Amino acid sequence: MLMDEPTSALDLHRQIEVMDLHGRQARTKGMLAMIAIQDLNQAAVRRQRPRHCQRPHAAAPQGDVVTAETLLEIYGIEARVEKCSLE
Image (cartoon, rainbow, N blue to C red; front, side, top):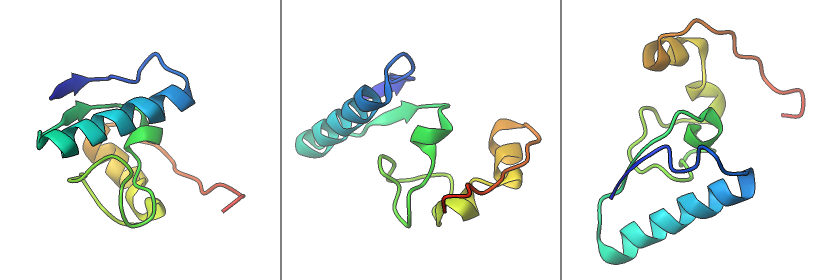
């Protein structure tokens, strides 16, 4: 199963629903699912295990993965990453 930006025009609830559906289908049918996404909220690693990705570019706590260095390496952009005050 190959998908390119399957959640790009969806609200947050539907994005999660679509990603979960594709993951369940891949697991139950023994399929490989490759999904290209640029949305950092969907691509970001959550805790030690990513929500949707079995082979992420990097796996560690989110604060250790979403860094200025990683954004430069993956997207070729210079950025500053600040921690949320709620963490």
